[in-house]
Amino acid sequence: MEPPAPRRILVRGTNWLGDAVMTVPALLRLREKFPETCIALLTPEKLWELWPDHPAVDEIISFSPGESVFAVSKKLRAGKFDTALVLPNSPRSAIEVFLAGISNRIGYARPWRNFFLTRTIASRPDAVKMRKRSVEEIKELIGGNTESGIGNRGFQKSAHQSNEYLHLAAALGANPEPVPPKLFVTPEEIAAAGKKFGLEGMAGPVFGLNPGAEYGPAKRWPIEKFIEVAKEIRQRTNCAWILFGGKSDVEITAQIQAALGGGPGTLNLAGKTSLRELMVLMKQCRVFLTNDTGPMHVAAALGVRVVAIFGSTSPELTGPVSEAPLQILTSNAPCSPCFLRECPIDFRCMQGIGVERVVGAMVRSHT
Image 1 (cartoon, rainbow, N blue to C red):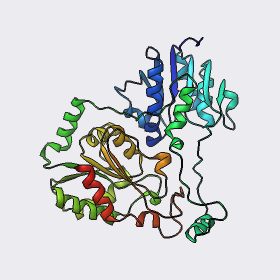
Image 2: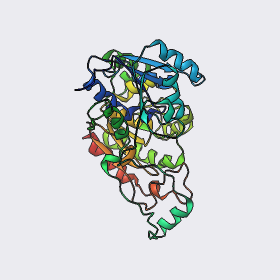
Image 3: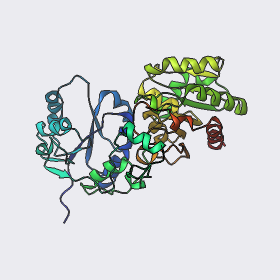
Image 4: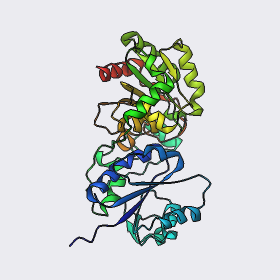
């Protein structure tokens, strides 16, 4: 016989935007398994706005960067949870639920934290560790020497990071089969954002462009190539462009805006939106052109058509998943994926993706 369903489940969420979106399938499967159970999500304050009105989440508990593990556990103790599912692999995330006195605590077996869990889950057989390549390995690969077994092998579809979280949810009896992540915004939010940011005055199809990437320059397609694509797509479609990004992307989006001539057909919103406003504005885009970033995952989960450019990372492991059409572009660089923040050689993984390929992918996604 199955054990009784938990009354109140606490899911300790991940700390980064893209990772948070990749946890959505696990949350959806938990909701499917426990339709009557209260499911609460503990999430960093910066990611709180992902979750309002999400059908898989009943309560949202957020914490700020400066809050101690004791302050967080005090919040959790007030929730009277009987089960905790710990998605991150960090010791802190396990200590939080331990100090909260939650009786059933489930997470992956990892050093320095197993004591704080009541049930540790072994790594999946298909799990892949994203190990950074050394400079020596990269030189061997570009030199064609694969005798040491370093070669650029593809990964199984089941290696995708979202399956890590689904596997944990399955420990509670949830279905481990993948489902696309889904995020939601409301018509009222769409109307308010359109008015606030002046979308009502933008003619033609609206395309989104996200040229940054927080992880490092190895994940960023060159700005001059983005500019060429944006100009060509505007010439072909008479589109309007919304430029997205964080505060660190203001300079590069200003470059793109200047190259496109400014005016009402180019709206530069880098550093000007909240996460929720970012989601609402993305939802208005016919196609979203991006590097491998957190916003890439958000756009895909909102059902926006995404064209994503990958260089130093692997779409098999952390690519977008969606019910909407996706175009994922990679080069045939033998050293990719290296998972490095900066390229130690000649950036061939990104330089090898031409403007014509990206324009073609944009046109296919648009039509």
